Length: 388
Ligand code: NAD
Ligand code: GLY
Image 1 (cartoon, helix red, strand yellow):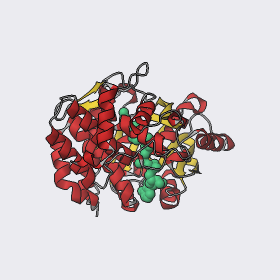
Image 2 (tube, rainbow, N blue to C red; image 1 turned 90 degrees about the vertical axis):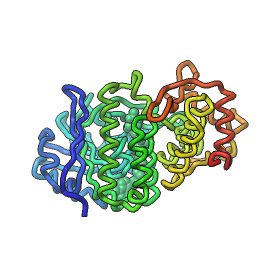
Image 3 (cartoon, rainbow, N blue to C red; image 1 turned 90 degrees about the horizontal axis):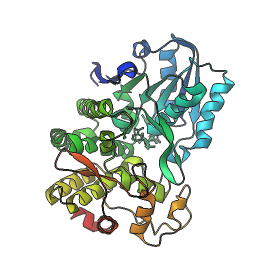
């Protein structure tokens, strides 16, 4: 049994501060939502996988507080994180004549959370929303901090807004139904916090990885809480990513290229980030910032977590694939394909790619690097050499 105690981590943003509640059986409990503004209408946004599992339970918990509780169930998958799917939320809001006090509830993983947040930011120029994340990845990262977005075929998460939820409810019980591959994907974002901010947490993850993979309740509770604490610290200092917050994108520059290059949904976001962290660690080493022991340590941990550590050949993906990025059209070789895609990363400035690197154990920095060096990293990491 999961512990019934509730842990709370606060995102401190003055008048937009909010709590992240972490615990068991929170989804069914009307108390979880008691402090959220009352309104006539609540709209639960979920997807075709999560809604049958949890929507009725959330609806029951919300019913004492809202006259109407509606549900919109989106198609499931990263390849649906786009305008067409976003519009289904607006269709539902307008069909139900939802007013500007309507509260949106994102019930699902990061895809549902990111799209619900963007819909909340723009419907009637802004309505409140609550995150009810049901994947490990969403509980440790995407539901927290107010980044909302949809993908564009030319780049991942390129259209969006910063818009904070009013509350985050992490019900650890929902992780019981998560497929093993998705649990591993979430572990990528947990591992991320170690090398960029907290080496003691990295030690803890190494020691407790088997317990995490076995879904030990206490281990999951600690991983979610510590991850949220680190993210809260970063977001509290730099909500809109004018500097520090970029460190949360460790592994993401390479990872986003993998996602867009293969076609959204081919590799899971967490898988692409896991492999991207191996690449970013190699780059940090080649820039003289860390020794090879740390690269090997991270690679071993990422592999133990069930994540890929050898990058895909994006040039080999020349056959048309659903959702594959048109940015790949011109490049013949693999490293060139990665570079093309990384030039549209949000951190890029005037076409110069910026990488989050490990700047010594437990510290991160944002750096540019010569294309030739990045090519060497990609060539190494797209062969078995990545794990030597
Ligand atoms: P996801 O939302 O696609 O969920 C993964 C899969 O698990 C889906 O098939 C989903 O239906 C299913 N699922 C969800 N909860 C379940 C449960 N409890 N039981 C069974 N199945 C369940 O993927 P994700 O990994 O949660 O999120 C990835 C997305 O998050 C990406 O789009 C990424 O860009 C985004 N992201 C955003 C931020 C941010 O700060 N906003 C941070 C990290 C990632
Ligand atoms: N996941 C990166 C961020 O929230 O900034």
